[in-house]
Image: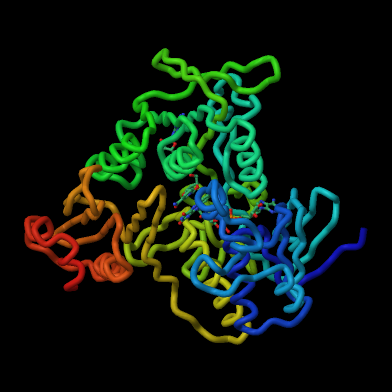
Length: 434
Ligand code: FDA
Ligand code: NAD
């Protein structure tokens, strides 16, 4: 098998890879210079669709409908686009060895890929229940969701187990989005998580109370403060029951697990400086190794706004970090300088007819505004976070595009506030005036 050599290689074919490819083309790329190597069988797509419209019972999203860059309002990059631009899409190819000093990658098929510049965009993988030693977690119909193949298997099970029982393990992003998606598919859904309220990494108890109440109204059973410790299976190896630590046993035709993600950095261990679980980069996504960049979920980068290093597992950052890295690579080649990355953290989620956005940092004291009752007609409520007299973060459920822009501005500008009563009284209009 002959080796192949490229000027640029992007390792990983997810969100960041797609946005990086578009930026290379914008900046000027010659045919044959760039390759994307991905273990997935399809061209880069907008991963967030997998836990939302991909699972709709009516008119579900399917490829090629959600290839990048539609998620941020851009044009879809279909497989033909890469061909037209002379970009090599090397799919269904897992890299199993990376030698950063020799600038060489080796695939599971034994093929060698040489590069001049590498962008690591391997993203994250799911944390499995078997990682915690949970018995029986390899039974049939226990699902994780990361890639389109996982989503396809789940869709098959949804068809096969029509109107059945689902247990969702985990109360984070996956838990909340999949709990809703399966309820919409008419499953009897129970959600189990160890914390006292859902999404504790972002939500305050008051924010969580709205979603938990809303989910309960939709008919979802929420079981908090305990974890799955085992499963029973039937004679065909399919999951039948989930055993909880508190002794309860839940019937299940399908189990969906979302207990967190882990950045895929294992190929580079010992070759590159790591920090906070990710590959350490500067504000241009350069790693400690010359000509090697890391973007998206795997990068631990300087978050200029808060003057600290952070890793961010969200799509907006994966897109923007990819674009920044490519701009930096090109500027470097041309001896030019570009501005350092100056990211404003932005997270969002959608489920049922709900949709929230959050910008900034959820540190300090939280001030809830609006009506967070699950019975409210508008669902419009939010929260500001104040630290040292400044508003650092803002969350809004069911905001209009203008209101969402306003909370983003607040988080960026960090206005001073003398007391929280003002925020409480003015609510979203405080942000709209900034
Ligand atoms: P990403 O995971 O997209 O891509 C990594 C790619 O590298 C994959 O194609 C993988 O197969 C490949 N790869 C890894 N190792 C390899 C190897 N050794 N050889 C070859 N290929 C390899 N965020 C958000 O802000 N809002 C949202 O609504 C959602 N929704 C959402 C739903 C679901 C189901 C998931 C799993 C995730 C989200 N996210 C999200 C998170 C968001 O999708 C995530 O942060 C980005 O996809 C990260 O982009 P990357 O390109 O870094 O990794
Ligand atoms: P997460 O970190 O959001 O949530 C993990 C949850 O797992 C915790 O909140 C906790 O409730 C639960 N948990 C931990 N240990 C457990 C145990 N032993 N038993 C039961 N529950 C346990 O992770 P996730 O929801 O798995 O999401 C995976 C990745 O996908 C993340 O990177 C996330 O950012 C991304 N994602 C993002 C979105 C979004 O931004 N809208 C949507 C889907 C997925």
